[in-house]
Image (cartoon, rainbow, N blue to C red; front, side):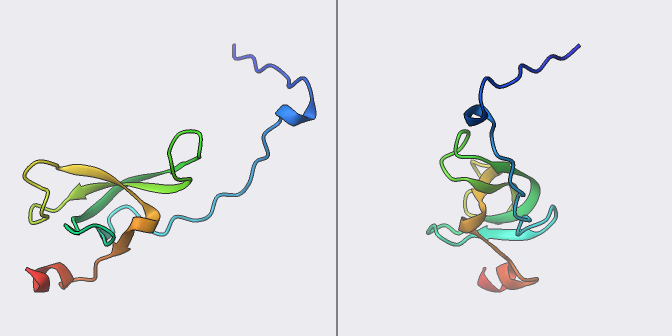
Length: 97
């Protein structure tokens, strides 16, 4: 049986706020636009990280890199913060190659 200890006073109760909706969905093609390599791939998963677990609070995404992405030879998956990613339009990456 799981037992949850009751808080000793109201200051220890964390406020629950509604999470903003994620900007990207599983299956979306994205790229990092704030870094020179501009790696790209497909969103495989996402989670909301708070300041207690990550340096930036917000949505974080697991990205499976495309085989044509600059870092693919040494990195198959990476995590990206929502503010560092943007959608890749169909054919956009192919035109840049």
